[in-house]
Image (cartoon, rainbow over all chains, first blue to last red; front, side, top):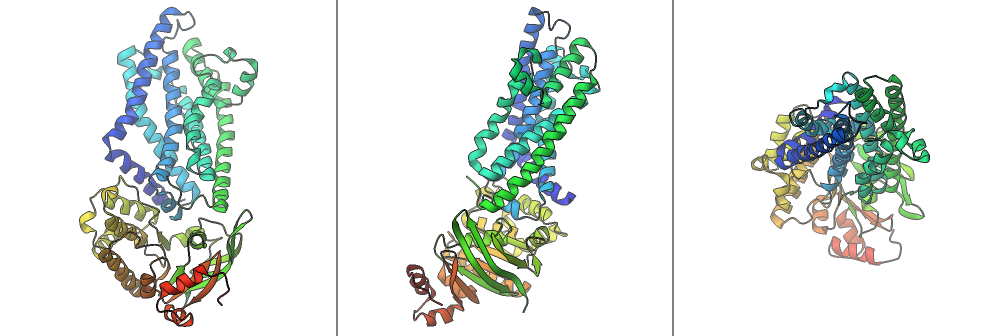
Length: 263
Length: 245
């Protein structure tokens, strides 16, 4: 692995973001709107239901966590799609970059993109709604880390599809998160789902992350098992996504998708 | 003379379709080899295999005496490519693009390298311009600068002067001739501009339907086929169904 090359690819996206004010605005705008909206919904539920009586910030905290997951995943896909849209894809793949270097660079850049959007949104929550996500304490770090890994995993899975099938796979890139959201039990306990859906939800790391966030905020206790299961499933899906990416890269080399990929 | 490119009986099948049917050729150091053929003859597929973007169904490729299949990264460090069908990131400035690619190719003296290429390719005034806002001629010279940023020993050019006006086209051809002579590099040139090929190439390969149907020095091919220029030879070969060797 070459740090110089990883840094080089990071710079390509860093220049792109910092050169364009609308791009920065776009990164900040949507999370802020999302969080503000969920902040008001959260306030409403807190005053009208008993479930949230002890923790007014539950919905808002989960909204922030979900937004981080969403931004990470979409951010990773955007970085990959950016190369296709700009017809730079071939240039990138004829540069002496290892797959691991490309992935590492995109993973780091996706994190920075997500944080650019998320930090202002988090800062908004305290003055506007009197809620601090820091109430989750040290476990906030583990929950964020778990979501980050899963967001990246989804990004790598979608990028594998783009490699294998070309730009026509783009629509899938936008819909993955929406498909998984109902199974993630972001705003409701898993018992809300029908039994068959619960079985699906239990093999995703999301349910453990959001259950634990609610558990900490509502019951003021920590169930370390949830954190453990989230990481276990993450490790499984992350390994699977990396293997699939390598497989797709080789398949693309056989099929010829890497040549002249662009819109 | 050292062969910087050595292609041994490579084939590429897409399912049942044979895109390249077992071709062999080599390119020596300080040589420009022309790769000619009608659309769909297998030129792009061949270049794709040389760049490691496509895996040959069978056969072997050696670049700078290294087997491509086993030394992809090492080979890509010393090879580069330009084509009108690929572009540099449009929103970045020329300088940013050259800097990024210098990093990807681990160029040691980036500032000096960019200054050298800027002077040689007359892009000094464009360095702070947005790449997507350049004219085709300017973009072409910037792409060439990117392709030379790693001081490649092997350069693959796909239609390097397509859509350029005669003045810029001539500038690029002269530059390539001089650069090849100065750096002793190998160039594989795929082009539909027969005057360009006649001027630049020591020898040419004529491809059709995934096969090499004729090869030799441009003047020898013209004489062999009883024509007055390479374009007529191209038309004769591409329109005929018979064997020419």
